[in-house]
Amino acid sequence: MKTYKLFKFCFYTMVYSFLFYSCSDPISTPPDIPVEELLSAPESISFQNQSLELETTVYLNLQPIVSKYPMVTLISIQTTDSSAILLNIKPKSVYVVKESNVWKSFFSSDKRPETEPFKISEVAREGPNWGPNIYVDVVVMFELNNKSYLLKASNQFIDAVY
Image (cartoon, rainbow, N blue to C red):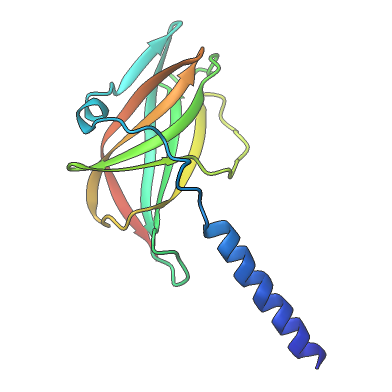
C-alpha cells in the first residue's frame, strides 16, 4: 500500500511540475520587429573601444520526452578580441529567422555561471520544430544604457540532439 501511495505522489508531482513548467504567459512576448529590420541588424557593433559579436548554437532536442517545441537557442554576446566585457549589457530577447518566418522568445531563467569574462551567455527554449540540418539567422536584442540594440549571426546551422 505504501508503494502505491508513493507512486501516486510521485506521479502527480511530475504531472503538476510539467504543467507548471510548460505553461507560459501569452502576453509576455518580445516586441514584434519586421523581418527586414532583423535581417539588416549588424554582425558586430562597437561601444567604448569594444567590438561585440554574436555566437550561437541552435539545435532540436529530439530526445524521447520532449515538448512539441524542441528548438533550443544558446547565444553568447562576446568581444571580438576576447577582452573582458566592460559594458553593462543586458540581453533581452532572441529572434530566429527562417526565410520569412520569425520565432521570438525571452531568455530562460536558467542561469549558468559565467566563466569567461569576454562573453555574456543566455538560452532560449521551446522554439519551433524547424530543421534539423537547415540554416537560420539569429538576432539578439540587448540593452545598454537604457537603449536597445540588435546584433545578428547569419547562417546558423540547426543541429539535432537525440
